[in-house]
Image 1: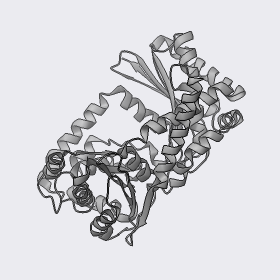
Image 2 (image 1 turned 60 degrees about the vertical axis):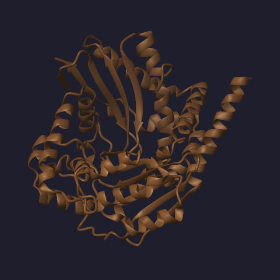
Image 3 (image 1 turned 120 degrees about the vertical axis):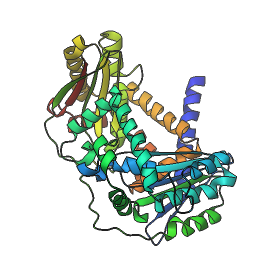
Image 4 (image 1 turned 180 degrees about the vertical axis):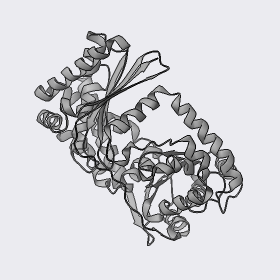
Length: 432
């Protein structure tokens, strides 16, 4: 009885917490195209400020490979109002804050978590970074070495390399095959004028979202945004959206060798885009297959047959065509057996679908993850800004209710729609 009561309370709180994130937010559109999302949350005297820019590796040509990530580094190295190299980071640390940034295939984001007395200054600093970077040659030269070192570390990371191989295998036509980290040759040689040109083309208000969540004064926050990002000129010279939809095709296999102790594999097939309701079914299906010790693949391949050291599955949500993938680590001699066992489990899943018990358990786990994640102002600002950047905030708003609606038949139909043995692509990295 206590367990049932706990689950009921958990699900109730999850739904409440989730709905509150969207319901309490205020949306503002500025004349220059900038979108702002503000939400007051006084549970703790902390504010999280995010700026999202709709630019990533999918926007790059081969001659620009890694430039989005390089610019993410360079904007920290001095701006119009904060010209000193370390000035922004020092200011944030002096106010007890934390700053970070990330670049992906589809976006670049910058954020500061700070106590409430410093959040106005945080908005000003982030705004200056994405509108007025200096890109001084004396700062570009040493930063080339820093990023090249990152590229080298990336090459030494088997998980990172496996992911690169997989993305270039499963995405044949769309720009998702582009590497985020890029190439050493581009970073070492791309001239400053090309960096500035790329920045001006993509870092424009109509391709930005600022999300601010925490103990804020909404009126004052709107005012400072209008005086910084909100007044920045919106120029978009001949911008062409990249190709993000992948057509169906027959899967392919590729193998390589690396300095590894074990064999690594990623196997996957294409899935729905972010706007599709199928993404909820995808999350449920891939959770049942390979999330947690009691998942199907883990139970059969690791516990029963002892073919793998680890195995998991997930759905990669993208604005364009997403990907369903399975990751496994095992001994080289087990490679054929592992692939056969995975295909056998997938075929069985297509035919029979999940049990009702599996379905309900996974729904509960997904909802619990939402609850724990959305407890922080950082995660709220992150989710609101991310989904708004791609104009799919409604998908985020209805996510939990759509998860709740998923049935056994929905999962079976999803697998039949997106999976077949012919569509499965596999990348294996063997130890040298």
